Image 1 (cartoon, rainbow, N blue to C red):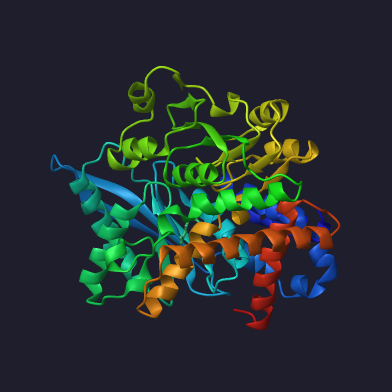
Image 2: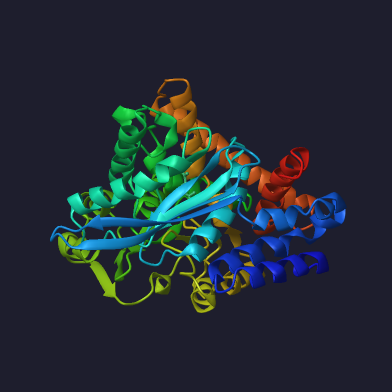
Length: 446
Ligand code: GLU
């Protein structure tokens, strides 16, 4: 790593002890930036790197609520308003027991560059709670969301900070959060949250956008080597919102999607995953993937407690969570013939795994580029809210496609320009960074 970057990196690690995921996200971006700061000494002079790593504002709050048995529960809520150089803070909320400040900061840091790459006017932020929605009743989830918003509302606004969903936060939770925001503020401020229901300000294609976008990106990468995803064997990890719509789009493009997973195990369905059934089990019934094999019957296997990356793949789409693909899994995937990997989740591949893919010549797309379709479509939702309009599915999907192709081309061109063709990690980090850095320079020392 470049000496200037190394010094800042060491300082970031020392000032944020124990936040290992955050360190990992910073290191990964800094690894790419050497040639940029050589070309732009003004970034160093204006301390752009130090400023980028220090969130503009960090909010940590108590979330008290009562469970169905009347017992008081206390969770911790977070919102990290990271960078507003390009627009209001924008990024999801994650409800998962693993959430702590280091996770929110890694996600928020990634979000800055991801949002910049979309070309939309949105800054970076992220939030969430260590609340575990698993096994909680609808009424408990509602009370939790209401308590969470009762503190958070004062920091939000359509021009200030606009949350959305992430792991553990989908349409149902956004509904409860929006209802409470509206009640407290007495404002029907549609643009304060995205991922809303269709009848109350949501956008068509937003539920599909992250997964669709990831596959569109993977397809663009594959086309640079003369072959699209058609008839390719695809393995997806996860079975939540991102995984479901990644599988659906891959099938629309003619791929054969043979496996997906949840945190208990994975299913292999050589005839092609029945995506509607996965959606029914996971999103409608809120059940476990194990049920898929039971309902599909003979020919479908369910493997508990093992990694979906044991399944041979030509195209791998990690759509579950951070650090789910390590060096061993990457090595196995390369041996099984993988040629395209696109991250639908945020930072699912460890740095060691990425190194394995890159040295084997695999086309690898980092999450901040490949999964940017979700937040890009959130920005389209904000645009519709601002103009009190709603667009058709076809038009919105066309916009999403243009945005994903745009991100792909920008990353590819930047990688080329910096002498590292097909290095999408470098392309994404540099082009996202330069856009934010320029805006920060123009806006002075704030
Ligand atoms: N949580 C999603 C992400 O990681 C979407 C955020 C949004 O739509 O604001 O980008």
